[in-house]
Image 1: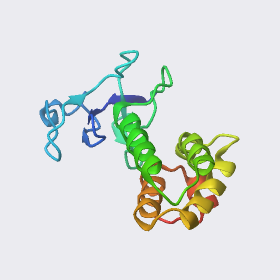
Image 2: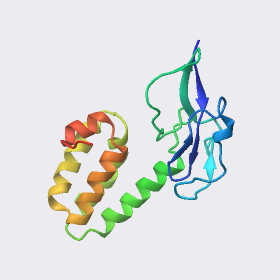
Image 3: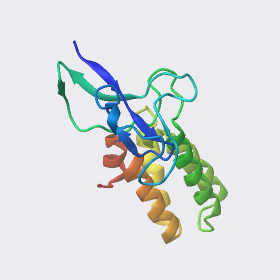
Image 4: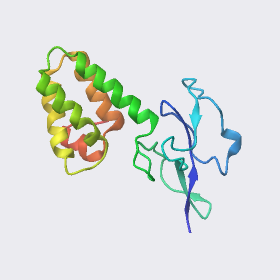
Length: 160
């Protein structure tokens, strides 16, 4: 029977080790990429962050840093930080109306996970990319590339 290893991820979302249980020598208190503190547990509920899946000594697939805690559903610090930064950037764009900004901000979480509202969110993203200033449009596109689920990427017509 397989199980998830514990992952260690910095507060900015860089994975320092996806299998702390088997490879404790790769653990580090701070990220070598950005210097941020690393964590192995959800700050909201203290559940261990799921790392690589181990099935009788074999690991499957490439590890992807999770956006939300599997146990409590809270966004991890790197997810919250990315959403906050996107919110601030969108709020400063002068080309978007207040209504466009509000709809776009409401749509960002639905870009990150497949929900019944992901298609709507992707449509709003596509529309916003045409209206927003160049800098904001590129940042929104990069947000979708970095955090968007496959459905959102397809629906928005964005490739990695």
